[in-house]
Amino acid sequence: MKTSQKFYLFCFFMPLVKLAPPNQQHSTLFHETFQQGYEDALFQEDYEDNPQDGLKNKEDNTFVVFNENKVQLQRDDDKVAEGTTNYTKLATCLLCVCLIRSIYCEEMDIESIPVLPKETGYLYARFNKIKKVKVSDFAEIPTLRRIDLTGNAIQEIEDAAFAKLILLEELSLADNRIAKLPVLPPKLTSLNVNNNRIKSRGIKANAFKKLTKLSYLYLAQNALESVPLNLPESLRILHLQFNNITSITDVTFCKGNNQTRYVRQRMDEIRMEGNPVILGKYPNAFICLKTLPIGQYF
Image (cartoon, rainbow, N blue to C red; front, side, top):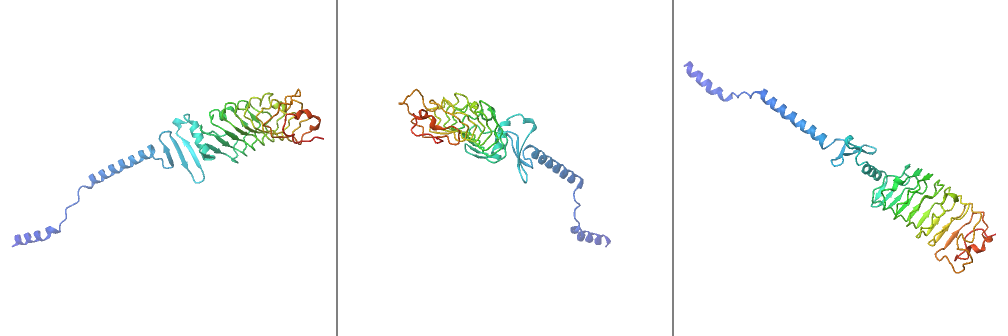
């Protein structure tokens, strides 16, 4: 009877008994190993490919770091000396406005010519604090056609700074502190150096002679004592007003020797007002001109 009762009790309680869970030690060890490996993989991936504070270019090891108030460029220490020009050019286009082949760096308080992309055709860097123009500023930019540096504080221009710019057509250096002109490129059509400190000795005797395409020459508000020599036949507009010009000669604009057949066909305007010279004293100085210069005659 007791045996039968035990058997019935066993059959009744057996379905209610749950199996014990597997060994927790092996499960925990597997989980920790997997988790550690996963974290190591993420850690390695973060430092190899995806820095958290910026975007990295694998080819040049450059980081563009975005902060709240500014954009910065950072480079790996291993390649600091490699490709510095490319980094600076990128920085130029972050600071200035780069539109296809035109660079606009106006009113940015820059103190030197920025590094330019090699394909630059037009540079506008007006109203800054540039003090010097060096040969190296444009040495690798042969594509430049127009440079406007109006309203800076330029005191010195290295003599060959523009000499190799064989495509340069327009150059504006107005409203600076320039005392002498550098060598000018051969295809120049317009030169504006109004309101500087240029004296006659600051212009070489043949500075304009070989500029056979020069049409517009602006030299007003300087300290010239005489009209520059060897002005090219291509000139159409010549501004010399408000200088210190005291006299002119028969060969200043014409060829002299009473060559009445010689006429400057292209010259449309000469302005000389605001100078001490009395133009009426030199009647033979204008016989080759289609119109008389603007200035004081009496």
